[in-house]
Length: 357
Image 1 (cartoon, one colour):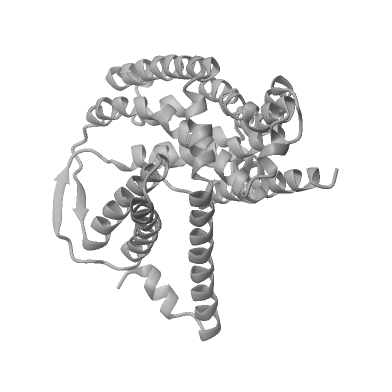
Image 2 (tube, rainbow, N blue to C red; image 1 turned 60 degrees about the horizontal axis):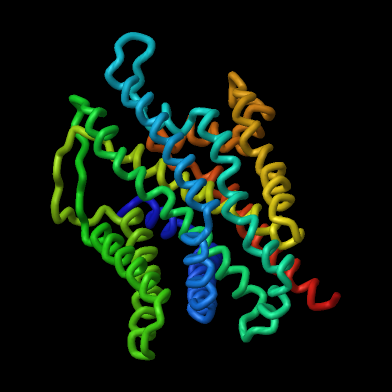
């Protein structure tokens, strides 16, 4: 029995009931979100494909890959350097660099500036709001399409992983274990991704049902198996000793996804409030700037109130001290998730206010 399950068993009956109720509520929320995205799949497909006909998206991709390629070459050079110039954390050398985050600061606003501002400027927002979709489904569809393109933006950087991980050769052995629960997580994620991709094209009713079952069932299976994987010391099906710690790469990409989700939600909110795309991009950069500038303060000690406050809001410090070292810290995850949810909520309210104008 794992430590998390033991903690759950030791709780009073009222706390147990509350935790079970919270889990059921989260499951119901996930099902409701999946249903909303399924209803708005045509809008998701339209918004996602629009990125591939926009010159701005390709410009963002080129600049982004140029910056990450430059940082990769520097990080790889530090791995082979000796003395004080060397590094044991190549992911920290890449993604804790303030220069990267100054470039990253501009990317989410450029991806979100057209989502609602263009609709308002062209007069098509009113037609979209008279569609069978609810305001929440419209916001979720545009956000999902933007987040999907953000993920595509990062896919080429996976080519850096073998080089950086291979250079992190260590005499200490790490055990990569495959348990029934971890295998369930992998299968669930594969079904989740396959179902999501099948929702985009126009398919028959039978295939639509199959894609929805894969999408919802895969997500629930991955979450359920992941929770029990942490709670139980399951029997290991395969245990492979390796000399490379995979945790820094996994934690870094998880942090990049969650941080991007937060910044994209900020840009989406601003785009729903203004008509001009350039103004939307500038305001989104201004709102996102405090989360980046806090990283330049670099308090020497994080024990004081000021140091803890700076660390909580500083995205570069999250990667400097946690994610790029293979540590998944709950504080930045709470910040990213709560900010994204709050901004999406305000975006829905912004659309609803237009119905009364």
